[in-house]
Amino acid sequence: MEEVRLIEVKEDIMSDNDAVAKSLRERLSKEKTFLINLMSSPGAGKTSLILKTLESLKNELRIGIIEADIDSMVDAEKVAAQGVATVQLRTGGFCHLDASMVEKGLSSMDIGELDLIIIENVGNLVCPAEFDTGAIKNVMILSVPEGDDKPLKYPLMFSVCDVLLVNKMDYLHLSDFDVEAMRERVLNLNRQIEIFEVSAKTGEGIEAWTNWLKGEATSFIG
Amino acid sequence: MHELQVTQRILDIVLRHAKGNGVNKVISIQLKIGELSDLEDEWVQKYFDYLSKHTIAKNAKLKIERTPVVMKCDECGHSFEVNIKEVKDIQCPECTHKKSTLISGREYYIKDMEVI
Image 1: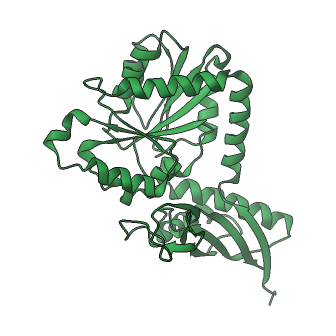
Image 2 (image 1 turned 120 degrees about the vertical axis):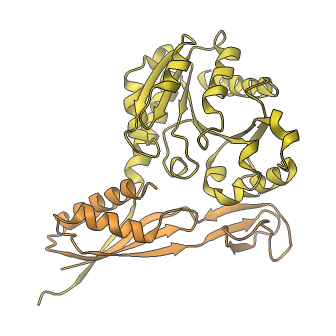
Image 3 (image 1 turned 180 degrees about the horizontal axis):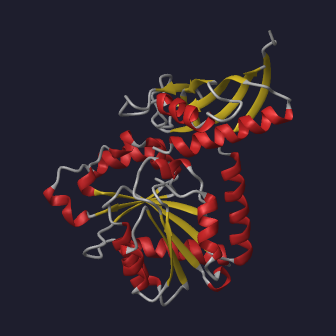
């Protein structure tokens, strides 16, 4: 009988994705294009938030959008109607975007002509958190109807994001969502995170968010 | 939910190492996965069995070691394990300070494999 041997592998499972993400970031920094990855659960308001952001920034920055959807074009059509460069990525059942998919999306955009690209990731609080997309900043939305306990249930998502947008603040008075408790839970996982309370519906708080975004994008592209 | 993609990556890495080492058959694979990951061990094995059925890693057993979530207190520097799914507040057991930094729990690592 053949002898059993032990082979040391010592390799990170995500190393290939991480390598693609790293080279994407190098390219973005050379091309001076700020890329953000927007994540949330389905229905938290990613598309509405993007539309509101475009309304406020499309005359100041050249913006492109990458829309990931499992199998539809609805969001991409709404965004393209705003007159910005939009690429639709059908993930074909994939629950998240990874760096190679984003690279593919970027290949059909003229990134040298864009200051800011927003990726609308697949609606899901679990899988997108595990895969580095190559974005410069990760942004997530938590909407008030989802509840203030979400940081406890999806800790990884809250720990990988640079910004948390608490959306649907116009609904707060109808809910028992505890903003302070939520803040404390989030900050426990991630102290560097910036939190903005917004309503994509009424426009409340949107300016603080777009000011932050504009500031970050401007300093990145120099 | 993304077990399939992760499992494909595991298989690719395993087969690459097997090829470089003149392996006839992979018996088991030792993985280290952080507690922050939502991967289900059972599904990783099922997907692996499906993906590997025509390879030399067919029937290999995945042995998943979970690495705990460890935080380091910003105040006193004490490192402590946290059961992230159960606690509401993360607090240093030594000095009760509430601010701490994540130092492990996000691992996704293949340690080694048994082969013949």
